[in-house]
Length: 293
Image 1 (cartoon, rainbow, N blue to C red):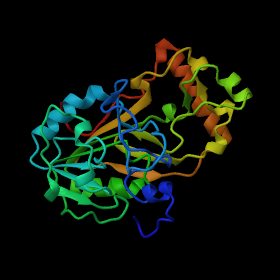
Image 2 (tube, one colour; image 1 turned 45 degrees about the horizontal axis):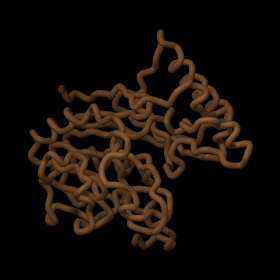
Image 3 (tube, rainbow, N blue to C red; image 1 turned 90 degrees about the vertical axis):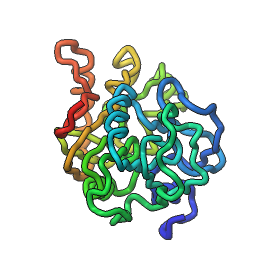
Image 4 (spheres, rainbow, N blue to C red; image 1 turned 180 degrees about the vertical axis):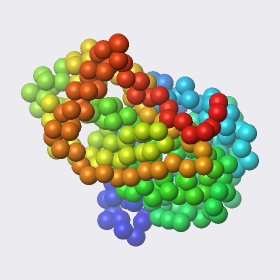
């Protein structure tokens, strides 16, 4: 447990590699794929498992795997629950002995990492225990939106790696409620979930720059969110995730919390772009560094 932890499950995990809702029970759901998304989580505690995705844009897995397979050294940041088997090294707060190897993200490949190359470390504490540009490729999927200091994690990824892949939920998915009858459920006092309420950050990618915007669920009023009724359907995976293939470097920043007016403009822009086939927003189109397929 981190020295800063208060003992609460959420605090203990938030000081580590991944933040999630408290009260999580190990193996409470069947192993493997839920729908066609993989789950990652952190520590085994009591209670229901929340939905925490390892990879939304599974269509990118072949390219990620090809890049990793051709690299001599590969780092998986936060790989405890669903390890990326083509990684030669893993950095996570949880120890190797408790890893969920039977839920590997790419079980068709034997693991390249071992207990000797598994590092127990808080990703928000720098420096990570690796030399500059030690890794040919790094994999960081559905971690940055959870951690308390994503800019530190990004800067260390760039320092220790020559190239990599980053994925998070899209900002649009973070304000989307996929349940039917949102207004009725809210009226009877059972409001559906909006996005992933355990996440700390909205994430946006422009080119090779990541912006982290603080989440405040108090600002998720009905006028600032997107419901299934607004779209007439669920969001697609392509609308639900964003990613970056990067080489040499990328940049990141945290920005101030958005105002109500900014939230409303963002929400309306997403709804308009999704509903207008002529200007459909492909939220998940991966930003590119200079890596080639």
